[in-house]
View 1 (cartoon, rainbow, N blue to C red):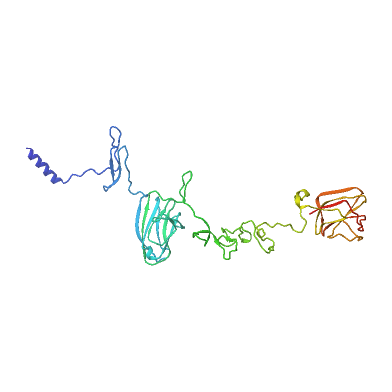
View 2 (tube, rainbow, N blue to C red; view 1 turned 90 degrees about the horizontal axis):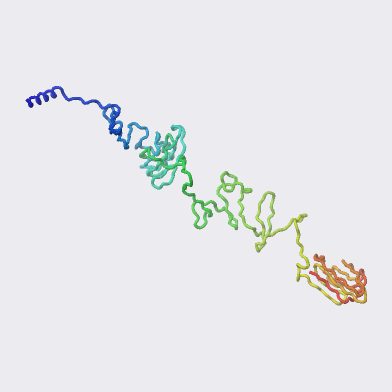
Length: 405
């Protein structure tokens, strides 16, 4: 009996054909356990393809087909001989664009990297990171790989800026992964190190100078080794801009010139010094107002004042120009005068005289005078004892002295 029933069932299946299963659900059914955890399910489209998978309550993953933010990889040719031929890449939410070039070296062409933020209407240059060296570059002439930041841009491209020959193979990878650093990326708070800039202060051509000096040696350098910034006088952003007359000036204390220069209005010059490096300072010939003047007194002059004494009727205190700081005379029983002459020698007896000073001294009396500021005598200083201020008639004193310099 049992065997007969199995035979009837098999015969019925062969006649009716295969039994069709229910079509997959279009949405995930709300299957939950008694604890509330979601049972892993799959959602299919009408063709039976998985659209989404959902994990359990502890986590899982979601991959949505058709998302606009995906990695896109393409490879295509670029005509190296056509000026401005380009490989253009549209950005749709991705962060980084990578390019790999093959055949660029052999083509002899130059590629330039450019960006657009208005859908490809306007293009401007952009830097890329050389994957081999990590150094930014704006153009390329050799095979290799680069990466561009796509953040905030609608399109990027590599363009043939200098044509060559042949074909360049360009592999493109547009990635949704974290983009490379660019100036448009915000920096975290606090200090941020962004590399360094080398500025060589040495003169170009000097020993051990780098290839990027700030100063260049002048075509006809002066003996002092003057230097000037690169560029022309008065041009924008040049080191010499703003320097009087466009001529850079060295800064040093003074300069020796055997013949002092004659300047015109607006010219600049160095201070002058003598052979020993001492500053030369002089006042113009016209009247000048000076804040204060310190004059040398007799006490300050010290040993510079020389007393000249005599017991006779005359004394040549100084046979050349000098200063008289005072004199002294003691007469005996005969009175007379002390006459001071601007001369180099004693006049002969009876000669007419014209003293600059003529002081009377009584008999048996003394006279003494001293002064801090000496009287200037242009020829010499001669003192005589005489009975007359107009004719030399000698009188013999007991002592007569002059203090001169």
